Amino acid sequence: MSSTVSLEQLQSGADAGIRRTVNRLKRARGQLTALIAAVESGADCGNVVTQLTAVRGALDKAGFELISAAMRDCLTDPRDELPAGGVQPEAAARRPTLKEIRTLFLRLT
Image (cartoon, rainbow, N blue to C red):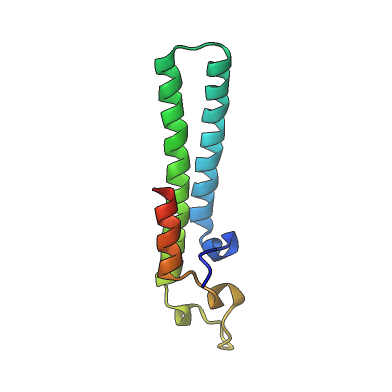
């Protein structure tokens, strides 16, 4: 059993969650740009560490948002998402298992 979960599986209908995650990643990118500039300009150590902590926090929150989306997806009953014809959509057919989600979560901590 693979512990790999694709981004498509994590997205499966969670557009709002994906937008939040992308926003967090963009925020982290901005913070990382500021951090690099601070290091290059010789900013004091306290300032650099504060900015580094902010970048790390933004990345952690983005990761946890992805894991949260996977958990919601995994815990949703696939029968609730069946179209009128009763055929399960491909995205809902392969949901991440709790073991896969746990593995992803532990990799973040």
